[in-house]
Length: 296
Image (cartoon, rainbow, N blue to C red):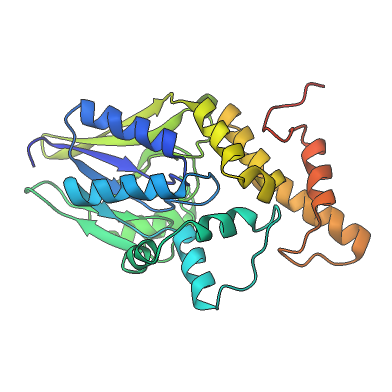
């Protein structure tokens, strides 16, 4: 390594504008080592451009990649014969993403591990995963029993993970545990893109948590121009609301739409949740179709 700095990206979710801004910030600092923790696509519309930048990192920089749970969803859809998804707020974003992937992209995802150990240049090794070292959709939170168990078993002084979009760093069981936050669908900090930079000082890794502004208006235009806002209206609106505010309501809107469907129809079979229930859930959470908060 030419310098003891490593950038950590996670949960890009197809937000090319945020991804590009974070990448350009890192190159301006001379960083050429990257650890990428999965969920490269889905939710935001820029699948092709995001994957192009992923391949630039792979081919021209020192980058290591992990598979996220969203990549696993896409591979599972292919493996089950491309059935079960359709346009609509429940699965429209997943279908939109899948239709904009190439065979090369799916092959790339398939070859990625869900956990790896990064060792280079004599620096202390780092364990990298998306959810937990065991499963891509596992959750690690500060102080929780599962987190303590995982960190006790971890053989490296640092463990990096993403999946939930809470940017945080803490020491547990003598290990640094770091979630760099989400590049593409960031929580908190007013919706600024989030990532981390690790710097080795005195034989130890020290974290710098970054929150970065980017061209959000360009990303909002892409939702409309790509057709994603039409294919998955409520999910796209809730995602844009997160980009605007840093407040995540996607799961809450989904659960409310499901509840409304079950109450009226007696059942709710995902992804066959009629759009009227999604629209009602959006209104209850005071979000318009462009992701703007509706004033009381």
